[in-house]
Length: 85
Image (tube, rainbow, N blue to C red; front, side):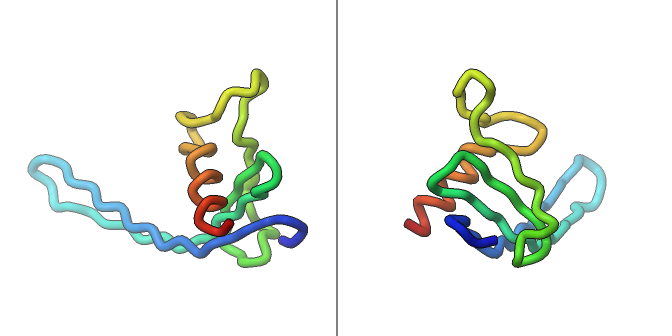
């Protein structure tokens, strides 16, 4: 991805504990992309972004998309763009 896209490699660890069961841990490594002069954020496993899932950070009324099935879209975009610029 070029043309105004920023990217960062993310290594994520999730640890789940449930009463009476052993804890489970998962590890994921992926690329996060953001169009900092636009309104989209995405993530994928290829550094070139060809497999990236891209989502808008605002809803149809202009409100920030924070809590949805894709995660905190606006926050992901904001953190990446503020860190890079």
